[in-house]
Image 1 (cartoon, one colour):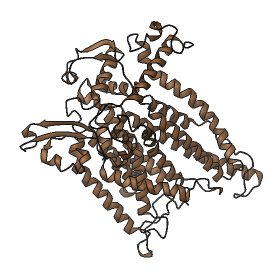
Image 2 (tube, helix red, strand yellow):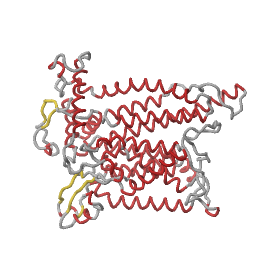
Image 3 (cartoon, helix red, strand yellow):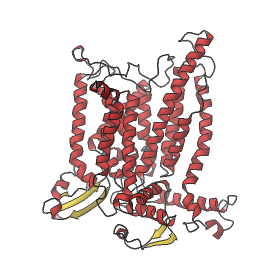
Image 4 (tube, helix red, strand yellow):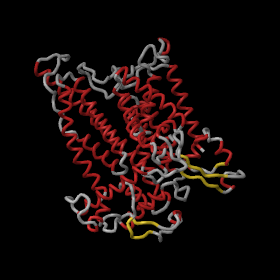
Amino acid sequence: MIVETLWRWRVALMAVGVGLLAAMMRFAGLGYPTALVFDEVFYARGAYSLVTLGFEGDWGGDNQDFAAGDYSELSTDGDYVVHPLVGKMLIGLGIQLFGPTPFGWRFMGALLGTVTVVIVALLARHLLRSTVFGAVAGVLLAVDGVHVVLSRSALLDIYLTFFVVAGFALLVVDRSRTRSALLAAADAIRARSGLSPGDVLPGMGPRTGVRWWRLAAIIALSLSVSVKWSGLWFMAAFLLLSVVWDLADRRAAGVERWFTGAFARAIPAFLVTVVVLPAVYLASWLPWFRSEQSYGRRWAEENPGEGVTWLPDSLRSLVQYHQQMWDFHRTLDEPHNYESNPLLWLIQWRPTAFHFDDAPEAACGAERCVSAIHSLGHPLIWWAGVLVLLYALWRVVRHRDLLAASLAVGVLAGWLPWLPYSHRTIFTFYTVAIAPFMVLLLVWGLSRIARPAAVGWPFAPRSSDRGSEMHGSGQPASEQLGSAQPVTEQPVAEHQLVGEWSRRGSIVVAAFIVAVLLMAAYFAPLWMGTPIPFEYWQVHMWLGSWV
């Protein structure tokens, strides 16, 4: 009875388990170090200014005065900032809850980082139809270094990551519900018309009603843009991906004019996007609009006849401000010790050192103790993930694998757009927004090893070691891009695996997960800033580019 109850609640238990692991990695010792690390000097202080002044005031004095509790250098002159406000408002929420302390300005990042891990676990469970691999995805993201470090720091990128993942998850929910409604409606039409299940359905196919989940996804992705402009790349990629899903689903449902039908349904989504995105983005600038002392707020009044003259003064000033921001980002080319070429981001070639300082001898018992924080992605996860990415791209080209394409899009949308900007001062920690999709892609690859689909695959089960099919997963055929066969059975998201487990493949996957966890324990001090002997830090620097 107890076992049956636990089995029935296995998804909830999985979500709680990975959430606890993620929270432990993100909240343990969150208030340490007490100093501002890396770009917290901009965002923690900006968030405090938003909380106290209602806008971002200019700061003077030493950067670490703020961390010491000295806020006297905050002026009422508007500060020239180059990112939207949503991320800083969320950091400010943590400051309101727990005060202007290291724990306070890092709290919301740790919380939303933990929530992101749970969402990824549930996503993997849904897409792979396996609670086991949902748990694996949650565990891998919970212990990924770049995600841990950014969750424990008051930088904007973890908020960008949260909204990007939330938007993708909402689109997956939308796809699942719309697909079910489409197939049910198609079957009903065939039954009324006297058609057999395999007959082509005339016309563009049935309507599926208002897609509220896609609207929620558009709002979430608009919020990602309101954290950092790079969210726009994810938004464009994922909304185009949702159209591809519609194409595949209408064709799989046997709709005669499947392309026209999917395209017709995409037009309202496009119109909604061009309304919702600007509305959400402008709403995120409300503190700037409300404060006459905000940077550039009175530019239009001070420069009559300049800029976009047909706009109201406040919007004309905001447009001019954004032109300055764009010029800043486009021309940023100041040498930095940790700038990195995006070509090498996915192998974590040049991780960013967020913090490095000597610690008291008593902190670690060695002659020299140091506290170091490196935003280094877990080497095994990222290096293996790159191999799986290459395999997934091959699957897309060779087999038109829609699930492989969907997961690869999340990685490529956060990576490829940066390649033309390799001359700029940019950093490897931007890959935190890629990390959830790299993990999903890696777990997809691991699932193909543990439950291989092809008989010729090296880990394919022999007759002597076949396992039982996972409860509730069914034995679906591979879903391909543009599959034209009508689907009459109960639809199940994306899938490409048979139901049998390979003993050899499962052992390989289990060994990989154990290795990941052992390596996470090894690198954890460099992700959490735990004082360690200097020699111990040195042996972690596997590559010269990490130093």
